[in-house]
Length: 502
RNA sequence: GCUCCCAUCGUCUAGCGGUCUAGGACGUCGCCCUCUCACGGCGAAAACAGGGGUUCGAGUCCCCUUGGGAGCGCCA
Image (cartoon, rainbow, N blue to C red; front, side):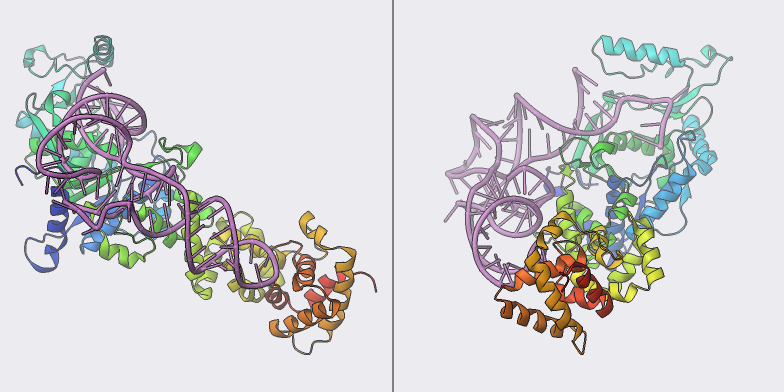
């Protein structure tokens, strides 16, 4: 361990040191990270980013990322939550090495570690009742002291131990000095030991606490790097004490900043603390979300859009910033738009089919597409559609003209386009288009332009009414592409629906 | 209350003592392109929280203030 760093410098050194070696020499023990969500809800967007960073870090160093489900809170852990988390990770494209470890199943091992500490005197039984603890807290609060356990059973002789109840087991934490966390992201963080009390390792019912379980599991799983949210920073100090009591090496730790809502406040359900599945439902592409999340708090110079491969190549925890970032959906949308446009049609089509069951109105759209055999039409319209959509939801919305059946209901704005003059023009256009030998965008364009010229109107004066007739809206992909996607018969029929009777 | 962390345009950020009259991206506002909407192109407005130091020189280092955040459970 380096003795004393300045604040800023060590982060980079730590990152560098961790970065290169592995490919070459022995210094390079394989990096093992882990993502350890507690299954009390869906995969939160912040958790997803934590998973991403762990994943990028491990992959960038040729290491492994493990998955551990922290299900020791039996009351709040649920099967659906576990499923949602695994599903969320898979959707985001984050895979893990080996099988997921379930923490609760390891309770016996956790107890065994406590026995060791009991035997070495690094832990002791505490018989304080919940009421006593509550009193301790309230009097401490009243006297303006931090609410902490006062250590009343720390040095009590065995003879004093009551026999009518089971004790909790507490760590005999050092009273003096300080505990140092050499954090990969936060730098050197020093916590005075007097502010850390004797935490509970084993509850009086014999079940292990989170603090204990995390240490034992990380150790047993061979975790070399713990990357998690800063909300665990104080825990890092407490856990360090447990590692020391157990005589184990402390893994490297990196505490990444939290994500805040758009208003700068803590992320909550009201503003953006959504599960990743919500982003799937909003029509975001996993690759875009990955890119966005990676860019939130981490940077590689001015690079904004990069592939996952590049992120893996570039990622370094040392480059993760220390301040919290706000979640900006407008930027995510823009980024997603980039990905939509950049995704080859066939691939986008696959992505859409996969997402359809999750999109609002998706199942119905799917049914209609299947029933009416409209998939080819959809594919034909896709290039024009994806250009205009920031999300798959918008893509689907843009394709509504394909799904809708005659007679079309017109939006008010479209209705306004269809003036008597316009309808008369449409009637003429109908005749011309009907006479077209081949139904192509170029052929249609020629006819439309020619008619506009003959009528002495600008192209828009004809194209817009045509759009209204064809799509029921005033905006759509290029109108000649729409004509092609709809096909001759349907197009002509829709035009006739709106044309002035001859 | 106590402990710890953070602080560059509205937002995400570049910046690791001189190249900063502070760069990029999103968003916003103009203009161009144009059959609409997008895309794209060009351009504009927009930031080093405040105050003290250190230094020949500070956005960059130190301290204080202010403002945010996190943690302080027999929850995880």
